[in-house]
Structure formats: structure tokens, C-alpha cells
Image 1 (cartoon, rainbow, N blue to C red):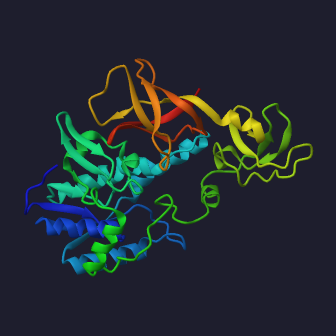
Image 2 (cartoon, rainbow, N blue to C red):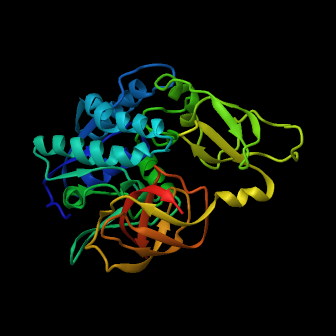
Length: 361
């Protein structure tokens, strides 16, 4: 969207350098900027950085001379994101909570809160671009391909992008840090956050064990030979190599084992090694309903597909089907395509939308 100079824009301030520079750029463009710090997780421990992040956001707001609002969306987050996250793991799938968080919280509850503050637009420090196409808002990749976050935005309802700004979309990360340093922003050298937003840097299996019971079952080869015991299917994902604790199995080659299949009906985890790794390569993927960020294309079309965030585009023929989610015919076999993860579709620089992987074929 193109908000008018002087209009109020609410910028999400996370306490990091990206959101700080986004707010700085908006001020330089002549907007009336308010900062908004959101808290999504109430459990405070050694892994949660919420307290420090809020203090960093306050310091940025003081330096920029803008009002900072603080609001908790913890109840919404637990209900709309975390409960779905746990439900997916109970089903033996591997969800992407960051995609859900963008859809339900950042560009859902948070956007609505910004509107209640009288904002004509809501801005964040995401690395992505928005343009006005003939058919409405178009989501494009960021100029900095190494930081592009359009994958995580593919589940946001398209109409919401009409009220969103991404000030960093044309910048590279090095430029963002340089701008922060020149402006004297106190977070110019703050390390980037990593990991799932509400988990932070803590060991993931340890975190998950607080919410899901351990349900041990057999670890076996594809032909049913028993190798050991697993902790519970939710604690493993397809393609996983570490944490299986079955090294040195008698009668097996001294090669790493990989999770190949989950069989919920028997609570069994099947693993492979060596040449059997080919069992993890699939040629077709079916997703659920696509969240379209364009007018839905024709029944069959070619696109680039990302089945995980850091993956390069994979060429595919997309076949839309009336009674099921689309079928993605991949040009080359895909390693460990995982139900519950998100498949994002692209043509050139434009993200067409995305859907959750339901099955591999």
C-alpha cells in the first residue's frame, strides 16, 4: 500500500535491529510512527528473551522519539498457534508455527490492534516486498535473497497486505546494520534471533516433552527388523539423523540412520541407511487448500516451489484439483518432504501463495 505522508503508521518493534531500522525509515519518509511491542509467550525462564527484548524496544523508541505501546497476545497465541502446533505434533506431523504466527498474530491480531490505534498501515521488519498489481497486492521476494522471508508470509490473507508496509524489502542486511549504526540505534550490533519464536534457543525435544507425553514404540527397518525404541513419534521428523540412539546395530553397516516413516497405527518409527535413503525421496506432494496471493491460476501451471524455508526453488507442475488440495509434480525427487510443513509457490519474484503439505506420493 502507499500510505500518505504524515499518516500514522504503527511499526512492530521486536527489540531487534530489523524492526528498529524499519521504524527509522518510516520516520524519514514523513510518517507519524508509533511502535508496538507484542508479547506472545508468558512463561519466563532462562530461554525466554522477552524482558530484554522489551527493554531494547524501549531504548529504540526513546532514541527515535516515538511512542511505544506494549500489548500481550499470549492468549490468542496459545489458542490460535500453540494449540494447533501441539495438535499437529500429536498427529505425527511437523508444523511450521512461524507461518501460523504471521497469519493469526502479526498480520491478524496485531494488525487489528494497530488499526484501533488509528493507524493507516502496520509495518514490520520482514524482508519482503509488496507491490500493487492489477489484481491487488502482490507479495514479492526481498532484494536480499539470503534474508527473504516471503516463505513465512505465504499464509497471510491477501487482503491484509493492503494495509501493510515492509520498509526493508529493498535493503540488504549489511545496509540495515549500517543504517542502524549511523543513526545511533542501540541495537545496531544485536545478534539476530533464531529458532521458533516462543521456544528461543532451548533444546526443542526438551521443550516439547513439557507438553506431550512420551509414548515409546519400536524403531525398525523398512522390512520390520527391530533396532531399538523411540521416545514417541512427535519427537522425530522425516529425514532426522541425530537423536535416534541406534548406532552400531549388529549386522548393519557403520552408516548413519535417518527417519524415513512414521506409522501411527503401530506407533512405529521406520529408519533407513545407505542406499535405502532413496525411500525419503518423493516425486509428488499434495497440499491442503492454497492461500492464494493472486488470482488462482489455470488448472495446470508451472511454478517454483519451496518445501522448506532455506530451500532453493524447485521446479514443479502444479495440478489444481476440485475435490482435493493441489498436486505438485516435482521435476526432481525431493528429500524428506514433510507433512505439516508449508509449501510456498512462486513464479519469478512473486509468491503466489502457499499451503500445508498433507501427503507425499
